[in-house]
Image 1 (tube, helix red, strand yellow):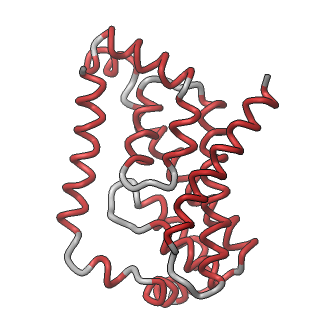
Image 2 (cartoon, helix red, strand yellow):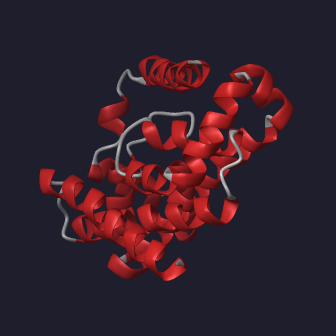
Length: 206
């Protein structure tokens, strides 16, 4: 029960942040607006893009629009690499924040029963959750922090995070390179591709 409350509490906190920053935010983060903002950083546009994707941990940054802008500026390959690096960095930052809370705090906050339940959940099926969550709003941040809190095996988390981040990075970079906003089918593909990659990763590991 406490694990569920932790999950809901983080989600509500993020939604509250989104509501607080919401005024005019969508207008700032159109594809054209994001390209203009990143270009204003000159040769450090890629750093600004990564920083925006990491800032999505706390701010309502539309990651797909930022990734599309990176694709528009740098092309599919370089833009996709930068976007994947940004998504990986955001996931690692969330995991690190959860980890820094400490096991003692986690056991007190969640209770022994829920902590052990969460640890088993993320150790066994957490890879699927991490990989598939990258294309969804709110969930990537909540899941990354929770994975760190319950000590999901770091190697497993990293592989799952890469399986979710790379397809999303290259897919939306390609869409941005074409000068388009993200079509609806792209979200379906950004769920399917990570699932196939994580399935393949699991087979290789075995």
